Image 1 (cartoon, rainbow, N blue to C red):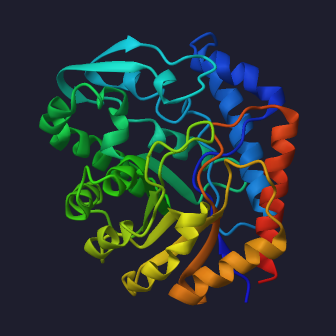
Image 2: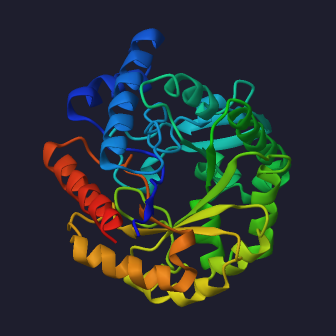
Image 3: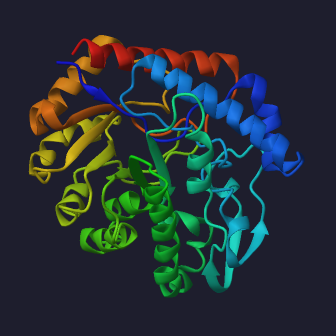
Amino acid sequence: MPLRTTVAGSWWPYQDLNQDLGRYHRGELQRENGIEVVNQCAGRAISEQREFGFDEWTGGEYFADTFVAHIPPLLTGVVIEKLPEPDGFDYDDLGLISIVGDIDAPNGLGYAEAFKRENALPGGVTKSTVLSPFELVVTAMGRQYDVIQAQFPRLCEIVKTEIKELAEAGCPHIQLDAPAIGAMINQGFLSPKQGAEIIATCFEGISGVIRGLHLCNGNNRGRPGSAVLRNAPWVPLLQELDGVIDIVHVEASYYPEYLEREAYKDLPPKMQLAAGIVDEANYWIESVKKIKERAADWSRVVGEERFWLAPSCGFGRHSAREGDHEVLYAKMTNLAEAAATF
């Protein structure tokens, strides 16, 4: 039978629109002009994902600058010490913030606002994402972890409020993006129980929607943020989230992660699995045959009826060069064919 397909969140940049999109994020365009560019990107992304035949699609997250770069200006109680590098190459180019008071996001994080706007575009939007509490202050974590711990109830409340607004706006699938939690569990900095408590708090009181979770080891310009590239340690976390999370999208593109697939036989029976088999960070194009082989191996563990095929992460950190777009497009073409002919 055909496999269901989904995407992580962000879609690829467009060469002809990327310069104006960058101007919008730098505040060089009037808001109405910038929103027009964002909507053009989102409309194109929605159309492409639907043409691939994906079962779920997003608006591409073009309103968000480089994954976390748009967050600090939305927060009170923080000072921006260093702006992100315009052509950032690695994690130390994401900028720096310092926490100087109680954190709040009085105007939200932008995800619900984007969904409402983009859902009115042709095709609508079936899935939206929200960053986890750690990602909101990730550029302060190396220096102010104790301060972050004290602010964590407030950070969780900010995320929960954004998720609630998305649910009330009618978003069918709301996914919490939690690479920091995945990486911290892998490296022993956070226990599965602690991670589950954070995630459950973010979804507290949310019902009537698909509650999703994305776990990976980080991906900035194709580089993981974790020194440990595994996914088996996430299974105890997911067991703690039985009844909280409906579908988990896990990075499964690294060979060590593929080798650990048997651990997912202990996934809660009612939880579905989206395996991020197609490596969006690698510019080698996986063949349809290889994708189907990997998908078969994973689906034998959890059952085809609760298995989804997906790219490993979002595409937002790629360049807008024509050759890059062609590679990513070929990857998604093969993913769609592998799913349809499974």
